[in-house]
Image (cartoon, rainbow, N blue to C red; front, side, top):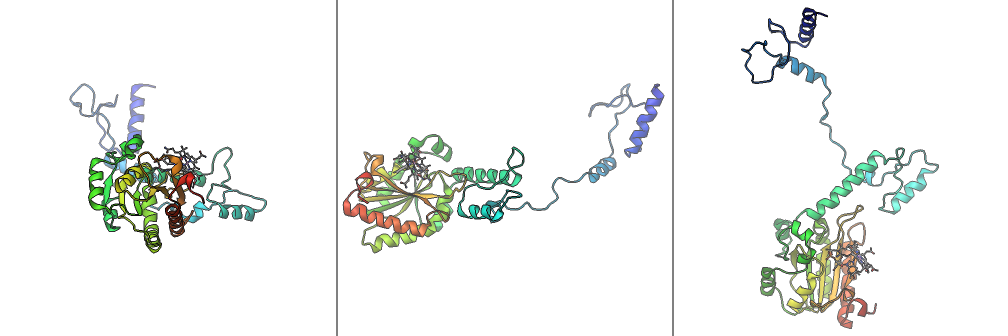
Length: 318
Ligand code: B12
């Protein structure tokens, strides 16, 4: 094939692509952008705007503008992924009885798409609740003031559990100034490892808990919020305020099934020498576990026992 034939093929292809102003000389190579065309070679070919828009309008857009369905809908959570089951109602029944991932089915050796997307969504939710912050606006709306542990931010809190177990100097000062001394019961709220545990459950647990404690005849201290707290921080708070019982409501480490579970750690006369066997925990407090209102009743009852027996943990007879 001679040069002229090649050039005529090139030109006819360019014309098909919508290029009208073809240079008179031969198109021998694509000229890099910005280089002068006043050289030996003729100007480089650049597709015209018209040709470009024609091509892109022929492509199907990736985003059709339709919304994807919310994976937290009940139909995805309680999803029966087993096709051609011998008796599908048995699987439906099993799905209703647990929050665990059962009856997901499979696509060959792989998980099915809905199953995989749900897993990824749950994983993201769990990661989010750990790194999210309880906002000052939320605390203000719930009439809570805050103090901070020795962790300066969330990242340090996660890397240095030891700092979350100690109160900052400012926290000690504020607690000393604002809290009632030597109450029978001191309630503390902390984000711990789940912000959603606090923001989703507090409204339902604090009113019945405070009311229950007061109705039982106990003097109750001023509740406050400890940012970036770990469980052991309740011992330092207990020592500082000389409360008989310390109740710490704290966000639990999230799992893949739920990420908003709250725990209440309870100790009788905690000091910095308190050991884990003196501590008790009511865990799994959330709407799908022990409902907050029910947990409040259990905590009041446990507090009554702690104060009666002047003991907690393994020393308490239940
Ligand atoms: C992480 C974890 C642990 C870790 C704690 C390590 C750490 N530094 O984080 C390890 C593996 C050591 C552990 C051990 C135990 N755990 Co554990 N643990 C959990 C888990 C998954 C999360 C707790 C959490 O998020 N705490 C909040 C964060 C902010 O706390 P933290 O300050 O970082 O860590 C403290 C707490 O985790 C606490 N803690 C952890 N487990 C327990 C258990 C009891 C009874 C107490 C008093 C305290 C406690 O100890 C840590 C150090 O102070 C929960 C499950 C849940 N859904 O809550 C079970 C859970 C709390 N553990 C439980 C149990 C039974 C135990 C053990 C008694 C097991 C055993 N037989 O040895 C021991 C006791 C440990 C102790 N401190 O006395 C049960 C408690 C049941 C109950 N209501 O009484 C739970 C609810 C699991 C379950 N569903 O069975 N645990």
